[in-house]
Image (cartoon, rainbow, N blue to C red; front, side):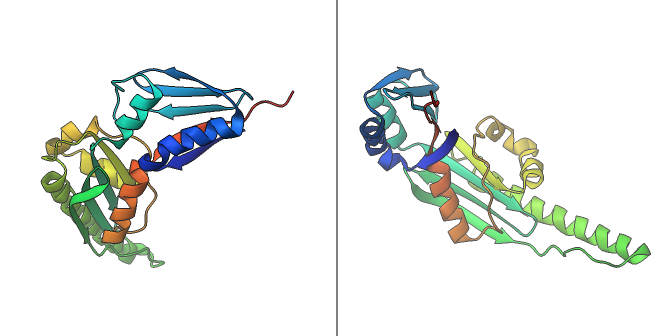
Length: 207
């Protein structure tokens, strides 16, 4: 069985030690983009290196790399709100959140429904335009090492389609975060989730 666990960068060293304690001696296969741990009992753990490439191809190098003060951007966009933040070493150093009213669905039919749909579309465009301006102001000049997004995928794609944000597109990395309408607390938690190291675990096969 394969599953994914999320580990805070500050806990990675202890987690690696605990993996060996639980599963027996561990061999490391380290590349600039991925670290593969194979335990004595056949358990596997795979870590995709955040902010690749990994400069020091060792366990110690991995731990030092994830603890470095990388600049991580977070962009959250939904119809009802948006948030952008820059995190350095886990600390939120710049951010902006906002909300826009976008009407929900209606059961009305005919011309009323069409007028309602047009009004919703206009409101959504205004919300995405506001989110774009915030991203341009907060994220574009931040010299990010990576960008994690969340909310509504189509909304995020609409924002990142702006030519002023083209340099950010290549920095986007998983995971895509599922979040409610972004508020400050939501943005702060998204930063915690975005920094977490994701480890793919595979249990040994039954004989």
